[in-house]
Amino acid sequence: MKKDILIKYRDKDQELDLLGALEQRGLNQYDDEYKKLIEILLNMLSITKKNSVPIQQYLFRSIYNVLDSILSSKESTEEFTQIIAENVDENNDNVTSFVFRFILNIKDNVEGSGDKRGVEALKAALERINIEALHAGITNNKDYSLIVKLFYNCVTDMESDRRVILHAEAIEKFHSYIIDNPAEYLQNFLRPYYNGPRKDHLEFYLHVGDPFWPQIFQKDSVLQYLNNIDNTIVDSKLIQDIREYYERVKTKPRNEDKIVILYSSEYPWSNEVHLLKILSKEHKHVRPLCLPPDYKDSKK
Picture: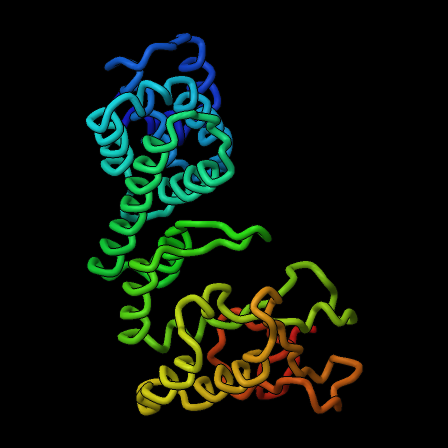
């Protein structure tokens, strides 16, 4: 089924109808027709603009139904992962997000396959898909927001507390990227720890850094990175904000979230010395109430 036809289903809000029709075909043998089904689902996933969960769920069911056949030989596994790689859309992270979940499912043994060697080979091939997608995004100068999503999808492992470990090669590529693009990295570095609290709650003022900065930087290399940034290109106050954040959280245990409380005139305990007072207006995700010059949203 051609992509332009799938786009028509999408634009008419008929994706769930198409999923139902595909499921009624009752395919259960990993042959050319089944491979076309997987390709259709990947195409649907790559172009969808709505909730991708129903597509992902059916795609996973379709794969697990024939996983033993996919793992039956090196050639079969390579052909399967090539189908996935060919359907990665360079303009979104829909398919790489699916691959991210697929890798975590393998870590959780969701697929339940007894072919451990075959599963590990599949996992390595899936990791390669996401690393190559990140490389392509950087090479093709995609927006920072997409590049960071592609980076976050480059999972290789998961700790016992469910913290994601990113692939070393992806970390190396992203580290090189943010050396060349420091302003965007720093502007997007701090973000609220919670989405929902109101401004009269302490939780509203809690902020945290990029969740993967401890993996991106080795011990104390954060300061080296900040010191090497040309402050004629990047706001020196922005650099100072991230430096101050780092100094406050660097001694926190590895398994703790590295949280700070930001100063705001709306915060009832605004005179407390432990609050971090943001100096730069260039932070893109810091709550407006915590930004200078007035540290409060004039609309409120």
